[in-house]
Image 1 (cartoon, rainbow over the protein chains, first blue to last red):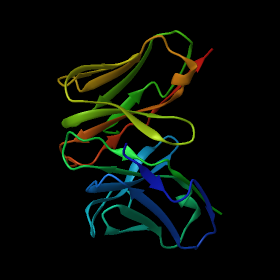
Image 2: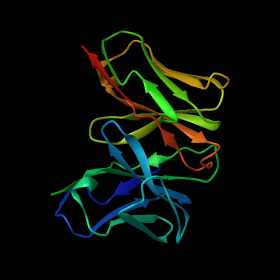
Image 3: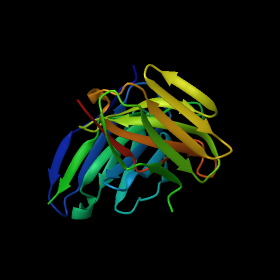
Image 4: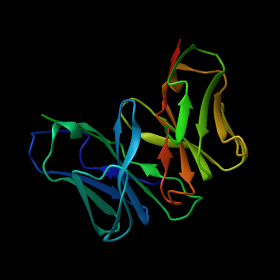
Length: 113
Length: 111
């Protein structure tokens, strides 16, 4: 079974803090994704990585950066957390190709106070 | 206007009822996914389809490419089917690896 794990289920941080969210997948997938999910807005893509050290901006990259130093690990970084970044963050991974589905992690509910 | 629209946004039904959730999209696609998200956050893939119909247990997904429309049906619904159901498409414009998501349909099945 494909497993995608995220470092925390719940996280509370203060405004201005630097926040790291980690995602690890164990199926040698090339592609990894970071989404945020907000009520009424659905899932929105923050960043996407299609290979080690390769990244592409999604729909809402402002205020975020990412790092992919190893194939299995994709990190989302909030350089200076703000209250409008309070959200559910979901990581996903997939193989390359249109026939492959994305596998999701359990999510991290981040609260910025 | 969102590229992927789902209806209804919320649906409450009694156990045993036949459920239909609809998804319409406005872009050319290579595939459409139906996902399920239970309280607590985890998302699992139910179906991926590019034509016709797929069935898994009590779940049936159909797609009409010409009309840019898909439906997810649940027969003999049960309280454990209560979840958010999400439609997502692989847009030909966005690129094959990315998904564009609908806003989700919150389904509640009462015993």
